[in-house]
Amino acid sequence: MATKLNTNYKDDIINTNVNPHRRYRLTEVSGQTDVYEFEETTEFIQVGTDYGADDVNTTNSTINDLIDEVNDNADLLAEILDGTTAIGKARTADTATTATNATHATSADTATSATNATRADTAGTATRATRVTSATNATRAGRADTASNALHATTADTAGTATTAGTATRATNADSATSASNATRATTADSATTATTATTANKLKTARNINGVPFDGTQNITVYDNTKISTDQDFILRNQQSLTFTNKVCRINDARITANSLADVYFTSATIESAKKADVTVETYAGYMTLTVAQNPTTTLVATIQIRVI
Image 1 (cartoon, rainbow, N blue to C red):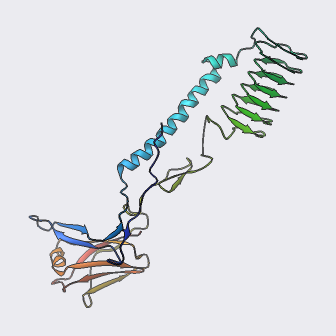
Image 2: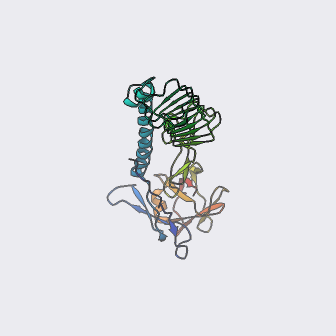
Image 3: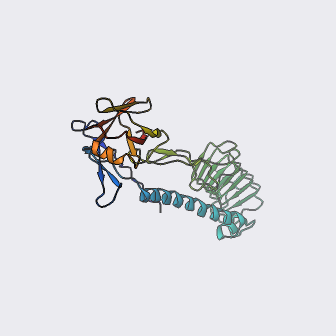
């Protein structure tokens, strides 16, 4: 059975009264030369939900369970149509015996094994029909009024061909209405929608959202949490380039940067020690970012800067 997916994911909400943007601390790992760690020091009002491999596996398992259910029902339907099951054999039976209460059956060539075949006018073959009116071949029809070939139809009014249909009403030419609970007014329908079991489903009638991303079965989707995973808008702002500080501030302009963007700064091994001593702070704004030092670096800092757009 398919597992229900989580619909209660939350975003990070920054406490802008304390820190208007995300903040990080660069710390050297004890006992390891030129090895540093980034520690987030941002204060949050709400911490967002983690989204990882377990969530992806749960989503994929749910989709796979649905695919298995569709395939299992398709196999059962194929057996029925091939006549390899009890239902399939009954479907292909031309003659059955013991007709009880075949009342007002005019020109009924073979009314066999029909319990209460009432008002079956001009019926070629009415087998196990409760009520058949003007039916050429109605097999196991609960109520088939003016049906040419209604097989296993509970209520088929004016149906061309309805196979194993719960309620097929005014289906003039339903070539493949297979295992359909309610196929209403389907005129010349090769495949009936609103089906309990669909043999081949190319597209979901109503798309379903998976973590906010619509999925209708026609194409692959990418599911991500934009507070944790990079998107297509991420870009490299600087690639091992020198940073120029004026009054202890280095400003870099770029229209793609937003106020909520994350800036990952990777100093080269030759300048990381100088960057540590300078105590660099990174801030992002709409259209630009800044690097601020507590004291001027002893050497020119060189870094690669990646912007993650949120």
